[in-house]
Length: 97
Ligand code: FES
Image 1 (cartoon, rainbow, N blue to C red):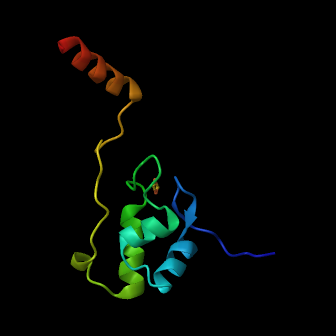
Image 2 (image 1 turned 45 degrees about the horizontal axis):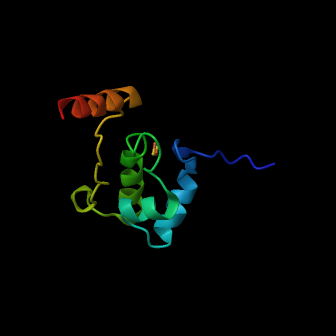
């Protein structure tokens, strides 16, 4: 039996620390590269739960300075928004016309 513990870094996409470290060793040394390769940061939280851990792993495994690692860019909506709120906004726009 394998006693090695799996450490989940990206809970949304079920990506482990080992998978991310392997990606870094293969040359994916930017958060966006890892995102494109493993889908980290593409879950419902849009990377809020895993981005800082991915940047930490990149720093540790590549010895890059924190300033040289570009974080993932945020896409709207910046915070999670219930779908009902978006529906109300659309209705208000339609009513103004
Ligand atoms: S924890 Fe990685 S996208 Fe949510």
